[in-house]
Image 1 (cartoon, rainbow, N blue to C red):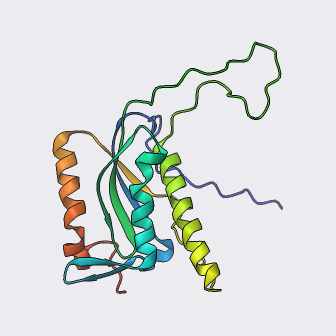
Image 2: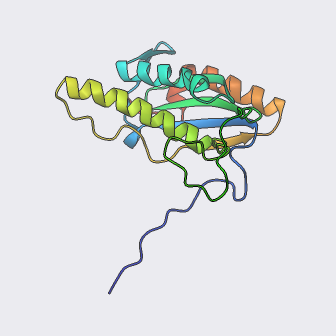
Length: 186
C-alpha cells in the first residue's frame, strides 16, 4: 500500500501578493529554538559570532534587493524579529529584447524580472547566513547541523499605529526575554 506524501499547510494569507509594497513583521527562529545567536545579560543582547553574522547579513538586504527597506530589527538568542518594508517595484532598465521565435542564450535577458516576495527575501537571507556560518564551522572542522527552523512567521502591518506598536515590541524584546514565548535558557 502506497502512502500519500505529507503536504504542509501554508501559513500564508491565501491570495495575498507577498511581493506587494507594504510593511511586514517577520520572526525567524533557529532550528529547535537553540540559543545560537548569543545571550541576554542585564536586558542587553550579547551577540555570538553566529548572531553577528545574522545581523550583518540582515543589514545587507537593501543592497541585494533594490525595493526593500529595513525597519527595526533585533537578534535574540534563538530568533530574530524585524520589520521588512517592500517599496514600489524597482524600475526595470532598458535592455536587449530578442525577436519572437529566436532562440535565447543563457546570458540574454528573458524579459522583466519577477518582483521578489517576502519569502524570496527571507529565503535568501537564511541561505546567506547559513553559508557563512558553514564556512566557519568547516574551518574549525566542526559539524554545524541545521541552523534555521523551516519557514518563518510574518504579519502584514496594516497601518501606522500597528507599525509603531510592533516597532516598540521589537526594540523592547531583549528586556522582556524571560517573558518571551520563544524564551529558552541559554
